[in-house]
Image (tube, rainbow, N blue to C red):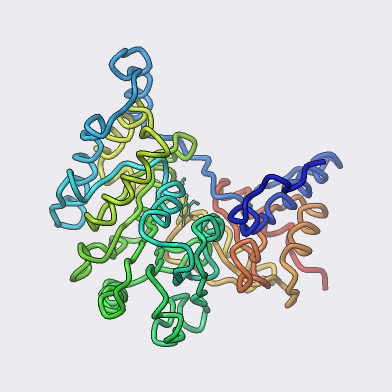
Length: 390
Ligand SMILES: Cc1ncc(COP(=O)(O)O)c(C=O)c1O
């Protein structure tokens, strides 16, 4: 039996994951012969771009990719990321100072906190929010000031409602739109106001932006970095996990404030040697994919959203239709509040695995999240299996 005998205070402060309980429930259901439809994790079933896979395959056989990748070796990805940003948002960043490759957004977020905060500083963290944020905040020894996201406020934080004393202690404001788990979006006006707020209170804004390409319709997801004053206040975290279905490859990049990225690069110099340059070549190739491909993938999620949301409403589970992301966030039917009890029972009884809302922070209690990672028919089947008993 393992104990936390050797665990540091930092590690002891990290919350336990409720997803282990879901794993056990899925296993029980499978052992009982139930066909499990796993919608509990945002790991997509779509495939990475062929050009990315080809570039990575070729790199395996190229000895120049086999050594340590120093900062200079990351230049092609920094250049490609900056060129992509200019194409998308019309702003030219400096690839030397305002771009940094990451081993995924999750790694970037955790190391960025170590880079720009000291233990005891406060962080303004939206809730419900991405689970690994909570662990990263604990590892950095920060005081977490939750920013409640409620349907009444379109799942946007009310910055004016933050306790002034906590605000004084805060160094960082975290934002993330399109949002996981709420699937909400933000407007350029919201980001302009948030960056102005960060200026007034001397905060760094971390905009976690994995769903940049998963917006339904013709509009681009707004970039916080593109807001007025953004380059002075914002670091934006990008990943290849969602736009390009390369989650297992562990690659992303940060764009934004040069001082914050310099500090992040210093932390990373003690921790890692950059993602393998072969994967970086795959990432560069992915960024050259035409916009139509990204729109076509978003369209797959839009159709899945329609299939799931329509059927949930038909079977008596009232659910709003989100405008972006690969998630659907809804209240547990029947007003039940214990999301872990509901989700574990649901998978054992019906085979439908969803993420319990409390996994995204205490204010997620009473909610569940579906990931749109199966085809439309399977999603309809899942919704029908969930029909509440009269
Ligand atoms: C908000 C948010 N940040 C970060 C990540 C992780 O991204 P990566 O795979 O690049 O670490 C996810 C993945 O679901 C996410 O939803």
